[in-house]
Every structure is written in C-alpha cells, then in structure tokens.
Amino acid sequence: MEFVGLSPALGAFLGGVVLSTSEFKHELESTLEPFKNLLLGLFFMAVGASINFVVIANSPLTIGGILLAIIAIKALVLFITGRIFKLKLDQNVLLTFSLAQVGEFAFVLLSFAFQLNILEQEQMDMMLVITAVSMSLTPILAVINERLILPKVGTKESIKRPMDHIAKSQKVILVGFGHFGSTVGRFLRSHGVEATILDFDSNRVDFLRKMGFEVYYGDATREDLLESAGIAEAKLLICATNKVSVAKAISKIVKEKYPHVEMLVRTKNRYDAYELLNHDVMNIYRETLDTSLALASDALNKLGFRKYTLNRQVQNFIKYDEASLRRLASEPKREEDYVFMARKEIEQQEKLLEDDFKRGIVAYDNHWDSEHIRKQLEKSSEA
Image (cartoon, rainbow, N blue to C red; front, side, top):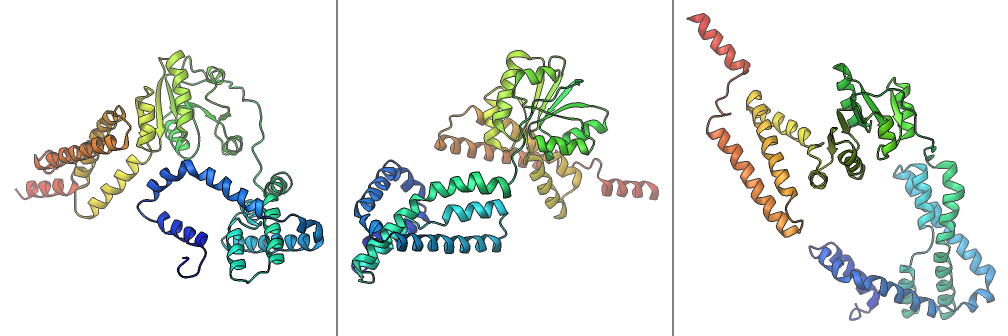
C-alpha cells in the first residue's frame, strides 16, 4: 500500500479483510487473540494522545453543532435502512442508537486525508475531536435507549409472578409446553393420559390457558415446585424444553431424590445428547432425527423403494445410530479424536445397513406391501 501511495493502516485493514475470508481464519484468530486487547488499547491511547482538546474550548458551538448533525443524519439513514429491511421497531431503534456515532475507522481515514493534504491541521484537529466525543457518547446513548426508548416501543418483559399452586398431580410431569411439548401433551391426552404441565414462560402459560390447556407457571429446576407437582408419586418426567441446562438441572434432582422417576428428554442435536448421556440421562430424543429420516424415507419412496422396506430400514438406522451415540459420548472430546471415531462409526453404520439389504433381510421383505399382496391375491383367484 505504501508503494502505491496509500496508508499502511489501510493496507493492514484490507489484508485483514482478505484473510478473514480464507481457510486460515480460525488459526489466525486463535494466534492473535492474546494480542487483540493489547493492540486495541494501544490504538486508542495513541489516538487519544493525538487529539487536541483545546479545540473544544475555542469552538464549542461549532463542534457541538457538527457533532449533533452527524449523529442525527447517521441515525436517520440507519433508521430508514432498518425500515427497508423490515426490522422490528425495537430492533431498528437499537440499531440506530448503537451505530449513530462516528466509528473508529474514521481515525484512519482522517489520517489518510491529512497525508494527502485534503484536510488542513485545524480541520484535522476538529474532526478528531468530534470523532472522539462521538464515540464517548456511545454508552450514554445506549442508556437513554434502554431506559427511555425501549420500554415504550420494545417488547415488554414478562411480568415476574409467583409460582402457581398446583391443585392436583398426575403420573406424568411434562416440562416445557412449546411446539414440541404441546404435541407430546396433546398425543398423551388423546389416549387418556393426563400430564402435569409446567412452563416458565408466563405469556405462553396465559395464552395456553385461553386455549383450554391446564398449564402451570413455574421453574422446573426448583425442587419445591417439582414436589408440589407430585414428583414423589409420578412415574415419568418428560423434559420437552430445548435448554440442555434445564434438563441437566432437573436430572440432577431426579437422580438424587427421586430415582424411581424415569426421565424422557428432548435434545436439539448430538452434542447436547452427549452432554446428557454423560449425566446419566438415558432416554434421549433428538428432535431432528425422526424428521430427517422421514424426509429421507419419502425421498427414497418417490425413487421407487417400497414403503414398508424403508420403514424397516429407518428403524435399523435409528438402532445403529443410538448405539453409536452412546459409544461416542464416552470418547475424548479432542476434535481430532472425535472426528476419527465418528468417521469409523459412520462407516460401520452404513456397512451394517448395506449388509441388511444384501442379506435380503429388507430387500425381499414383502410384508404389508400392498402391491405384492395384490399380485398374490390375483394369482390365487386365477388359480
């Protein structure tokens, strides 16, 4: 950059942009992390030392006017941009107040402009002061936004209220009644099994009560709430929340105080499942497993595979994958070791499924195949 007459700081910035999109990004981040805060501190100290604050005393009205004009114009542009991209009002206000100030890259641009004689020394000093004062206003504007603006236009926080009194208990306790939990609860109720339903979202509790569900507000990680929900007499506790921390906290209470209660826990992915398995939670249901297999099964069915055959293979896949999950949960968590073991497990799992097909366990399994049965019936009627 110096060779072509540009600023070394601009060259460093462009180099960083290029490297941030390369395959070496994570290696560079880990290498530079110890020096990042040190260099940032040094940068702002150098900038602060170069600012001539006497300029404020000499031209307070001019600097104040320019400062307000810059913040107002930038805020207006940001607010319009947020509306164009259809941000919610509270998000748009947060964007506007967070970025309305002059950014630190202005120091680099001003220095570059001064080197090219675009700005005179007096103008340079004034713009540096305006930039510094603008940045110093960031926390003040953030407080104004948080205390005065967002409470009026933002999403209202859930009103804190005491835990509900649970009048009656059931043999099943269901924690979390969002989309996942409500499906579980409705299916249980359709088969005559009522559950004591707990949820920590007060707005959701009020809404579900309007829809006719008997849902209780409370934090299920509290032992006193579980006791009032009748955990001492319960047989099952279904944890349908997507927060692994909640499931771990509940499992600890159940394991220590109520070992007779069997837990069935929802997880988002394999890594959450590993964490729960290592906390002795055995009944784990990954929310993406059945859905992804159902999609894959339908895709193969549309390519000509028999539906019943695919159902059998889906069950085999789940069996092999659950066994693999439990083996990998106890493996060391170093990335290299995990990748090596996971690749071996995937290869073994695919080979087992392929062997099932080749041995004819599934390939020639015609049970409940309507087309096969129809042909057999036609042959019988002809005979």
